Image 1 (cartoon, rainbow, N blue to C red):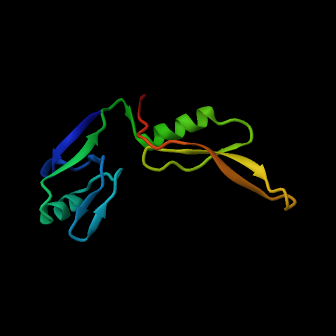
Image 2: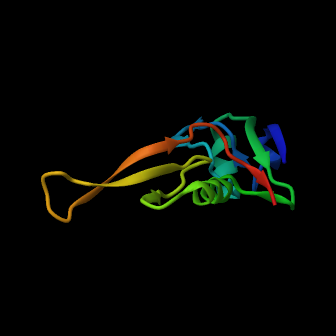
Length: 118
């Protein structure tokens, strides 16, 4: 993985490492930049972005986070959908005052990047 500042003009396909403000809003961390995105950034005066480019043997961070969560999930837990490089593993519990009612309570929630080599 190559990680660092990239010129907007050459950033197509790069994954934003930090959110970036532009003239009509914001591109959030984790977004894969398109040609249209680059045009908006250039029109907004943004010259560089902090982003990552995956190597052929890298695993995208959401896929890596999901794999880690599934590997450590056990009976009575549920893996919630990953979000940019993070996951929540929740424990299923029965509601004490409702018959047959269950809810999930987070037991592990990552907050930093999660990436892996294949």
